[in-house]
Length: 390
Image (cartoon, rainbow, N blue to C red):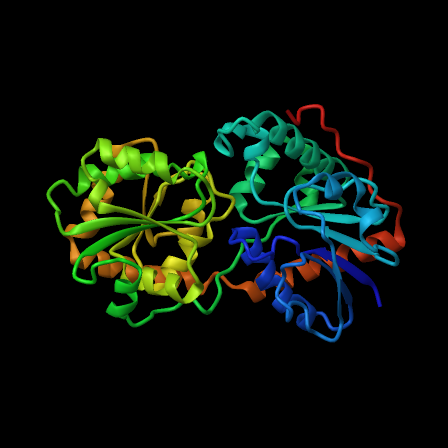
């Protein structure tokens, strides 16, 4: 039986879209491919029941996913003996891997717009790190998977020569996200007034999330809606203070609330209760909050660029994320037109139903089998040229 190693270290107790993707894939892939063996590289903080299928073994790796140990010394710090195929799951490919590799590329922001990823003093170091790892992934991977057609298109536009060895495998949405009865006491426990409506934002604090523009759009839309608040669940990041300053400058500080990451059951309550999800990012590889909100029956307002129109289909209002007036108009329409909001909910349910983790898992299994078969019959493919990678 062939042995596939999957790097699952983004499942580490810290909320992230990649972590959610890997949790879903690990729950499905071993069960759907009983003829393959799987070795999971896991974080010390991974759940104990992760990878409990009979054809799975776990190797705990203390080194962080995005650290020097992973980038340059993974074969020295993790047991990769006997591995026939390695799946790098978070954009970068470690050095020194002798077996065929598949890399999942989520987006190209670190290559094309690093300023969207980080605005701190470590940006030059982080940019060099991620660009190094992504260039290795693009030059040495036997195959590249992307989480959306939008990311695949952007990759092929930058590197046309990788087209034949790149496939989009769209993410899914957990079936835990579904219509949920609203519990006013739960909202009150989070510090929310159950009698007031709120617009919800979910995501880490990073420049590409465009949260300041979202707050400005909300201020315009809700100038005449004193009964509507804005709630941001900020899964990661350090910019809550600056965002509250933006709200204060607009005179709406008392109507903007920022929560840290919340447990899934609480997030379900927020999606079910919100008047809309506001998600005007500048870029998304996929955008799991979009799928989660649609599955819960929450109307979605998002951007007209990157993967967001692809993920939401006809089930969202899409706007130019740099146009605060357009953001405001979309919010006002959802708040002021109950019939329109109901129609968005119906479309959202239908769209979310098509986003299936089992389908994504089967697609990855197909890639595994394809690369394993090719590596048995032929030598590894020639590296891609990175002449135009920058």
